[in-house]
Length: 50
Image (spheres, rainbow, N blue to C red):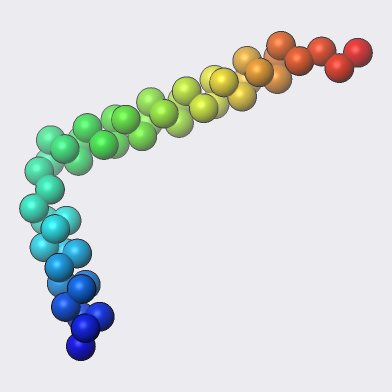
């Protein structure tokens, strides 16, 4: 029963998050992923093993 109550609380919290905040979170996650990819690519290009 306790699990059902906590799950219901999570669903109500997810519904209460505004769409603007949701879009902002997706944008931040997308730019963060591109930043990590760019850092890995430029980091491997600048590494000269020989």
